[in-house]
Image (cartoon, rainbow, N blue to C red; front, side, top):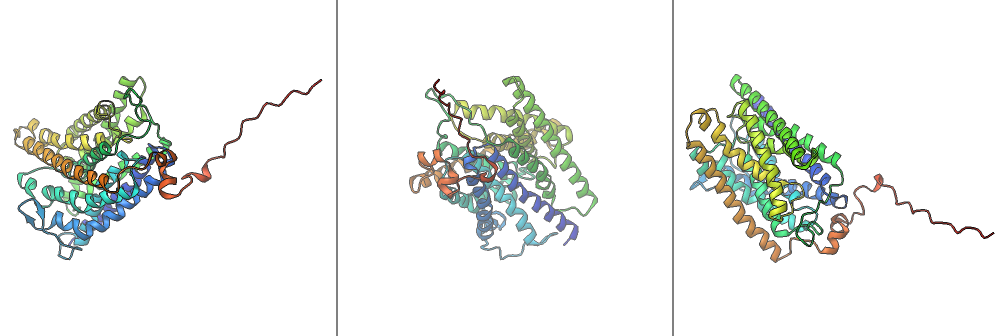
Amino acid sequence: MSATDTLWVLLGTVLVFFMQAGFALLESGLTRAKNSGNIIMKNLMDFVTGSLLYWFVGFGIMFGPTLFGFIGRPDLFVTQNYDSNIPGYVFLMFQTVFCATAATIVSGAMAERTKFSSYLLYTVVISGLIYPISGHWIWGGGWLAALGFEDFAGSVAVHMVGGVTALVGAKIVGPRAGKYDKDGKAKTIPGHNLVIAALGVFILWFAWFGFNGASTLEASDEGSLTLIGTILLNTNLAAASGTLIAMLLSWYRLGKPDLGLTMNGALAGLVGITAGCAVVDPFGAVAIGLISSVAMVYAIEFIENKAKIDDPVGAFGVHGVAGGLGTVLVGLFAVDGGLFYGGGLGLLGVQALGVAAVVLWVTVTMTAVFKLINLTIGLRVSPEEEEAGMDVSEHGLKSSYADFTLPAIPAPQPQPRPER
């Protein structure tokens, strides 16, 4: 084992864990104050349940010896030896924080109307079964890995799985009360705190260097150090180009640069480059960031206005669309095997096949999961609970900002004029 490799992966692990804080701030900031505590609880508990379920069964399904290329042989409580250049338990922890990231993406899309108990149930299914099986195809020696599918750090394996699940869940649970008027036109429901939403984006951008960089799983030789430098540069360039184009596009379309779309542009660039950060050059990274971000803007508009699906944070556009498209674009921009670099159509075809297969897998399985939950305990809170806010209805919190808000001051009442 290598001490340098181990410390590098441990650093990446804690950075990816910090992404939970970024998602919590982003999602709570882009929704209403009366649901902030509920969102924090969901982001906290999906990491808790994900950690336990992934240790119990998910890791073995994902990285155990392959059974027909579809699923790993279960290894309950991870009793086998997975040591390599790093200790097996370090690898387990690194993969655990990735699993939690996939689960937490869903909470923002279904925010402000989904029961807490229902959220816990489908998070368990995602962490213990849905994510590990498709992850086995890609990273665990499954059939996509055998075909040469390239998803270095998880544009599809992590982000698109979460993004597609978010879309399916948001469709089944239905839009928030007041989101659409009687003519079906979407109305804006402003987030209550764009400052903490922006802080969430900065945290995610910062932690993404661990997400992508530590996926090398090594940092002890000249080749791996050079690769880490390439990955971090590509990651940053894609995020920057995605942010810039989202700002310019929103400015052109809306007349003013939109903060929400600009922040999501950064995330779309990050999600898009995650698959190919190790195999494209900086020019390819900029192109992937630009294309992924443009697709995100139009996807969010389509989902909200045409499909009539209420996704408060744009999770599907950012993680589903940018994740899938960024992975396909590897087939064009990969320095070794990409179409634009003389590699032909082979890699592009494999990338497209892998994206389609994972979309189909997640859509079918999570539709069944959400519908089953909806038919039993129900996905959605009552209209009265939604109106009151899920902080008070689900958790008994009067306010998540009790000491930061002033009581309402009654307006002065007109005094009668004295009689002369």
